Image (cartoon, rainbow, N blue to C red; front, side, top):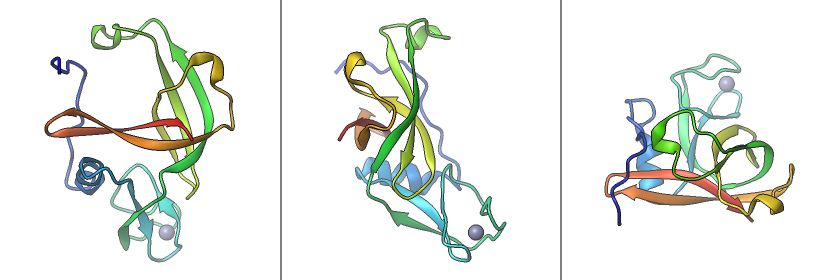
Length: 133
Ligand SMILES: [Zn+2]
């Protein structure tokens, strides 16, 4: 495996459960115990009702493509190796995730079903990306 040169996540106390789950190849989201909504990105309070009674739950990893762009001219050198698809996926549980979609460009359609997969980019870092379902 060649050395991974792109920026890596730096988990905080709040986001660490998300990244630890990714390492186990599981997608986990916070869920509010008061209003029951799923939350992404990880935070200390529910953005809907402001409760701090949040818990982590494993979710399906399934969703649909909400929006995307094909990045052909990267903003930084570390992403300049090849074009990539920057996507927003709407998870079946509700939240939208900004992510990468691995799919042939001419097969990408808004609304297409997608599923999470886990890219072990280093021994300590796993990224959550999506593929066509
Ligand atoms: Zn809430």
